[in-house]
Image (cartoon, rainbow, N blue to C red; front, side, top):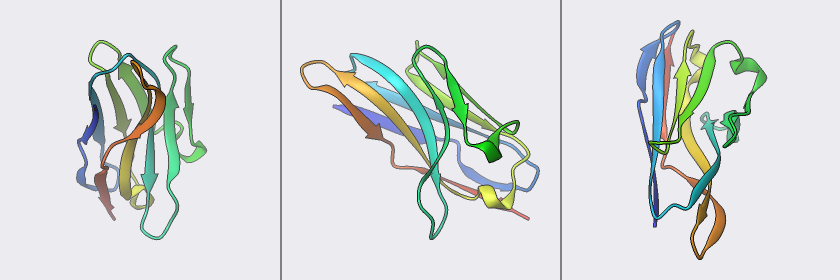
Length: 120
C-alpha cells in the first residue's frame, strides 16, 4: 500500500508565504513524476507545478516566479514553496505522484489535499 500525505496548508494574508510538503510512504519501488495540483471552489483541478525524477520542472504560467517545487528523493517528499500569495491562490492543494509499485506496476496516486486560504 502507498500513502500520500500532504501538510503545510493554512490561512495566510495576501503577500505571505506557505510551504507545502507531501511525504510518500509504503511499498514503493520508484517515484517518477511528482506534482502539485489545486482546486478552487467551483473550478476544475489544475496543475500548479510538476517535477520529474530527473529534476525537470514545469509550472503553470501564473505561478512562475512565485512558487518553487522541489523534491527530496531520499525522503520520498516533494515540496511547494509559495511566496507572494494572492487571494486567487486559495483552494485545496493536492499532491500527485506517479509511483511504480513492485508486482503492481505504475499508477498515479493522490493525497487527500490540504486547504490553502489567502485573505485579502
